[in-house]
Amino acid sequence: MALSCRDTLILIFQRLTVADLARASCVCKVWNSVATEDDLVVSAFTSPWRIKELVGRPASGTFWRDNGIWKFAISHRICRGDSVTSLAVKYSVQVMDIKRLNNMMSDHGIYSRDRLLIPISNPEILANTTCYIELDKHAKREVAVLYLEGAPKREQDVSGMNQLSNLSADGKRRLIESLRRSMQVDDGTALYYLAIAEGDPRSALSEFSADLRWERQAGLN
Image 1 (cartoon, helix red, strand yellow):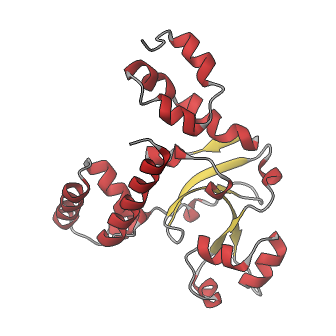
Image 2: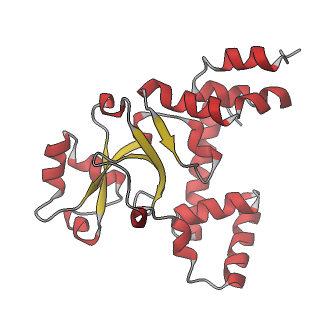
């Protein structure tokens, strides 16, 4: 019989990693209600990196599945003279890592963007900082973003939801219903994957399939 005292569970769960919290949430309803409490989840996500504050809520709970360093990035506003190579040198990262994170096929992709996300090379940079959960339209996923110059400018907060705004309400509804049936999920989950895929249903299905594979490998399914 599973332990059911909430106070005791909280004390135990405070020591768990995000992956262990996810597993604990599958044991029973009581464990789920404790393991999914916002304070516990956020603390487990941020504590390894000693982050002071995490601002915002992810569009999907899948964001909390892991807190590897790849879930974080630095926001760099593009300036005159910037190149992918110069930014790689500045931040001590690999050119291909910048391209991969920002879904860039070539160096010329930098000229059509206001900013690039830079992978974290030194985790110590996250200590005592504030990060902002954002759904980046180029990275096509949610990222905990660090702004070295301070807080983000509001116009930079871009959601993939905006990519669906040119669809009619009826067209969006039919698209979501089609995805929901294909994925066998609820409307909110279908809308989330459609958003990070910038309205492309094939990409949405691909992202969803990749998450399912992750769950099977992690033993969460």
